[in-house]
Image 1 (tube, rainbow, N blue to C red):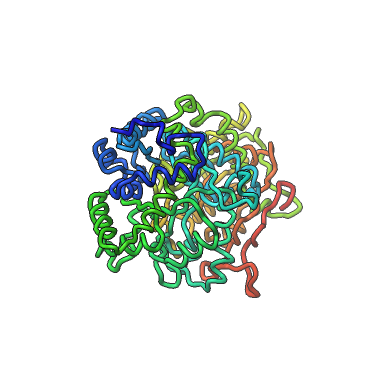
Image 2: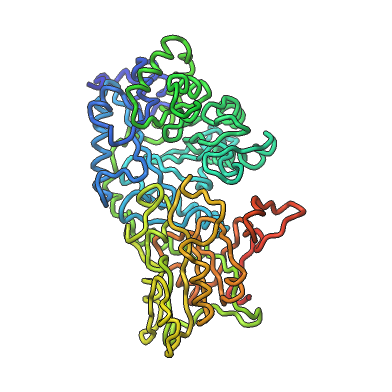
Length: 578
């Protein structure tokens, strides 16, 4: 049962300074309670007994782990509140913090607003828009008690008066904190491989990969996740220099550092061997909370033995728990531990979908507009007699949303609530316009005597995440180049490409098509595309990365003397240019 004498509990006084509350609570905690706070388990093993009696500090949903298929926001709130009540029933009543990957919207939840992937947001060059997306995502996440894993750009927070220099401080509030990930260098691995090795001097690592974290810390980010990747062969999860000396000491990070999924197991060779030593190396390197996620009993037993034997100093445990408690106090979890049910209506609400639609519009990059530069092909005539729409991506919401939607690698099909580009085209054209859709164009359709005013071909990558996205060829899947060419030889064609990165564009595609748009993975609001291609809004997107001619050019460096892209960094046409 929780302690009942609140009068002597500084940590229960909401008006006491955060650091005083942390110090008071830490002084009351036993070793099992401290270790419990350092343990994050997956919701499928999070029984009330485990949470209460093992003093679990955090529960999380692995991608695709839901209360049940197509669970609504209220179902998530019911589940998480149940976990929270179990935590509050422990001796000290320390609330859990719930973890979810909300990387482009609250994307695990059926019916939530799904925004464009981060590469698309980079193409917008609109920091205020990204801030509004973060705010909308946080609001939809607040229907329960979550860590909201927003990567890259964060809404700027005003530092408190005691931090006139802006940082270090933590800006978690209203039960939501952000997680910056993955520290550090996972975007610069050799050959671009997921969980690969970043080969770089420290000076280059700091200039290119560490610098964004300083910005996040300056804006009060509360948690940072370690990377599966390595730096010059050193696993990040056990790299004391980067995790402690750089992140915590040099950058002044005061929140907590969480491992990735089973991240400590990656320290050993072969992975998963000598788990006890992996725990020792990871915790001593600076990991504060461990995403176990299932083997919590072994983790708790091994770390307890390591502390009692002195192999993990008690000072390291106290530092980790201080950081975890600091975040929980700053986020207001002790005062507001349960879901705010009044916010359930915000999930997938019209206002948020309008923000997402705006983001889609601004993320589109026009790569080609007309075979003749003096005669732009776009915008399209919405009152054309007959329009041919082709491609499996044109009427597939899952392909439109990409990875980290419903499950980690995403799913094809009508997986959530939203508007496909085919839906949007049909809604945008005139009443007398006939829209013909085929996943793959038949010879009969292409040879039709009635003909088409133009065709819209929507092709691209399937949803993917992490290693499932490793690809050394980067050709358009599902015979995309051939489909484009077959249609473009018969009908004036606009190509819309869904992808998480630049793809190989064959010379015939560039030659035969009239217009080409990089739409990235735009999310649930397909109307954002039709808003632009039919001329209600102009194209604003600019390439956030260089578009290569051949994969053997990668990686492309815009500052290199040999720089020779197909489309340079920052390229993007408007409807009035060809």
